[in-house]
Length: 195
Image (cartoon, helix red, strand yellow):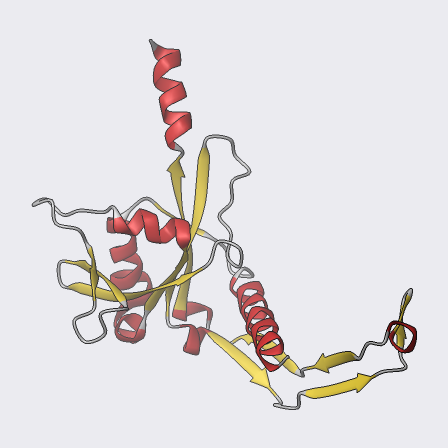
C-alpha cells in the first residue's frame, strides 16, 4: 500500500510540474547545435552550470544516436556516476534524465513525424513546488464507493490525500524544447513515392 501510494504521488508531482513547464511556449530545436545554443545563449551562464536535459525514452534514443565528426557518440556515462548519462559536445557537458514515454509522451499527431520533448535548464530555479507534507490516509471496512460496498464485499477501502501545488518561479531558467524527427517508416515511404 505504501509503495502504491508513493508511486501515485510521484506521478502526480511530475504531472503538476509538467503542467507548469507546458505553460511556457515550446522552442523548436533542430539538433545538437540548437541544444548548445539553448545552454550557451538562452540560459547563459546564470543557469548553464546547474542545467540538465529532461526528456523521454524517444529523446534518449535520439540523443544516444548523435555522433561527433570522428564517429564518437555524444551521450556518455558520467565517470563519477556510471548509471547517469551526460551529453558531451565540445566543452559542453550536461546531465540527461529520462522520464518514461507513458509519463512524458512524444507528440505523434502529425503523421510521419514525432515531436520529442527536450526540457533544458534548471527546474529547481524555474519551478516552485509547494508540499505541505500533510498526507492523510483513511480506511474503512463499511464505506461504499459507487456500487462497491466494503462491508458486503469483505474489503477495506482507503483514500490518500496530499496537499501540494506547483507554480512558475523563473521562466528564464529553462527552455521548453521540442525536437521533431521523421519516423523511419515515413521516410522509407517518401523514398518509395519519389522513385
